[in-house]
Length: 273
Image 1 (tube, helix red, strand yellow):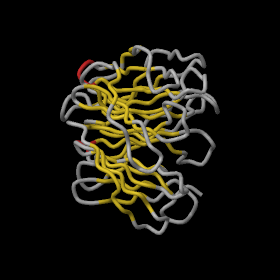
Image 2 (image 1 turned 30 degrees about the horizontal axis):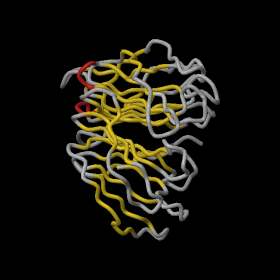
Image 3 (image 1 turned 135 degrees about the vertical axis):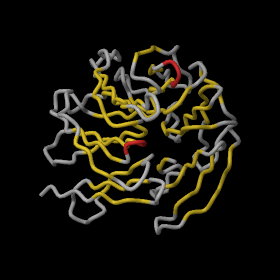
Image 4 (image 1 turned 90 degrees about the vertical axis):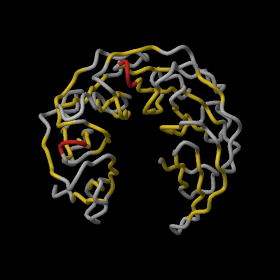
């Protein structure tokens, strides 16, 4: 699931990916109405961007068969899926402008080949052929963050690895032209499933939070601001965390974590002051 203002009314909407794409429009008061369901067989992940630069949000959807774009109509509905030549076995998707040309690009995890594909957007809803970078085994989640400089669009990838064994997070630094440096891996707990970007120690530098599925823990990697990270700190959660959201849930203005696991939702309150 992801959150965006799909119909341009200033209220956040929900886009739910569960072997089809369901859009639920928000009214700004916590209530949602389902307005469209688009059939996308074996849909796995969804990301939002204006890929044809018409001012209306589009969707990038990865499936077991490959990647498709759903062009947005601006009202919460979408046109038919348009295939993108990204290969099969596509997984998690993130949107950025990696070559800094003002056109949205895509970073797509290719799970069984332990790689990440970068697809540069042409600004008309189509994309150039993918450029591949090696990451850890079974990449399961990818995010964009300013890890090496304030305006950089670097990438962090959570790599699930082998079940019940230690996994990694791969960081690929943006050189400003659309090329990334080779991945640098940090060892984490068992089966890293999900990665998110925040500033957990309030030093103005981007940090990482990773859900380690089989370790029953969340790993926090504090960023040094130059693309490197300190050794991870581990925080226990009840059972098998598989997703997390960052927000000021405690009302203290700090970056707290809400963690979805098999027990329910666990809140980790940030004690930085």
